[in-house]
Length: 308
Image (cartoon, rainbow, N blue to C red):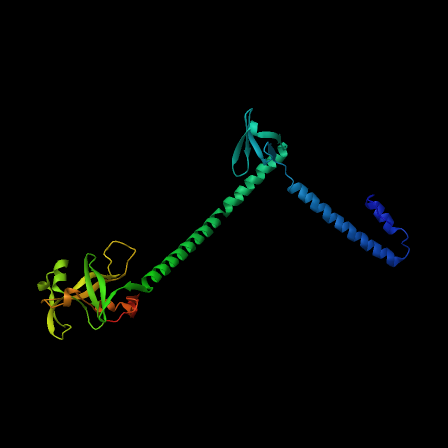
């Protein structure tokens, strides 16, 4: 038998007819309870949705096919101003196809809900601001960490310096105190950077006023030199002359101990101005590649630097 939608009472009558058997009657009663429970739940859900969700706002239908929902705050012959709950928009009558308005109760309820939502937003605002500040602090920490790693990579990463080689010697293009160019021979056997008196004159250093020390030169003689500390020594590619360019930053050390020879020495062909010794080289691991005319420097961290 097919059941037609003739109402709950017909359904009850059909289920209860011919129920002489007690067991069958009990089962039908149980089934009826289930049906009424389902109907009750469904009806309650419908009433809840209908009473709480189906709020009809004012709707402005535009000639371009779109529409906007909200509450009309103001209108005249030319314009209609619609409150969207988070701000207002004004539409010219020429843009509007037609307007569907809600009743007064619906409008009042919409205003009430918007007010409640705004209060809830204000209530959550301090917590949201706190979380935003925490996120900003974390982003700033991550940014600083990334910058630190990038700086360390740049500072402590390997750097290749192009050099000139001749008869087994490596000639380095050096900038002293950020202003004077000199050519120094790389010499890991020299305890300090050793420079000629001519270089001292170019730097404006009076060697006679320096602390006197004894030092050994290449021919085995022991001679006197004036000891001082240079502000900086920077090693750059061979032939490079532009001290201000960052394209060839090279490798640099600050406050480097250096010795200036008090007497003139015979430098073969005047091809170099001194020795690049360990007072500079101690700050780096370095490897000479004679085949490719380059020296690779890797800066050591301060705790790994040992005095020569």
